[in-house]
Image (cartoon, rainbow, N blue to C red; front, side):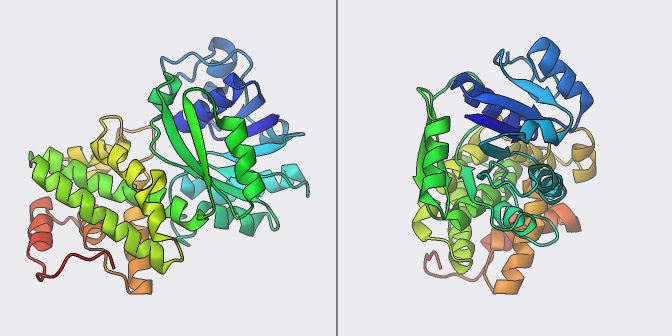
Length: 332
């Protein structure tokens, strides 16, 4: 297949490389000229994925048109806040031609709180969309460590196309139809990962981490069901799988941000040092606003949002969670 990948961060570059290794004809769009140059001249994304050699057939371009020209599949890998303006450019370049759009972004649009596939379908009416998510650190996929994800779409044929295009001996793709649940799992787990990082930064133990991850999964499921997702999706790769990885793995941007916060650093200081996006920051705010609109209880997300945006002390947030009214364990 001829495939265009829009967004050359670590994950976009990794997926583009994987697809090139699978024998597809690939072009990758990067916003940064230095990324385009490094990929085309040294076969490496020295900005976002240093130290990993890329497939010889993978090319990069600074404009979207050539990347999607004659493409049979387009992969969207931009941060969630950049999806809408990028999709507008993409729509102009496609000029009415309909190809499946595959979102590998993990987050909610900050202002509207819409899922990435919703934004794509709004900007490009009639588009067929597929959401891909699951426990998948870019660095480990680049090193061919066995990884499994799920591709979800309202159109089973589109999900099957992605499954066949991306699967190989080290990357296994399952299919599903819960587009809402898969995307919410990929977005909300980042908020819980910030919380677990906070605990680790404060030097708290395994008991605390296990309790927070478990109750975090309950929150994710609760909000997901209210938004039309299936509860069992959150027990799968896009829910529990990605939550465990992001909340415990040292390669997690959101967890490491939480660790720094737990050690007393300010959010502004941390973000100022980063080239990459920690999606959980914006998602925490979006999750709390969604919870208010839908009357859903999200105590962990609410405390994370208070720490990030209202200067609440992490110790006070823990006391607030532990001091809540006693109740039976429930997921709803």
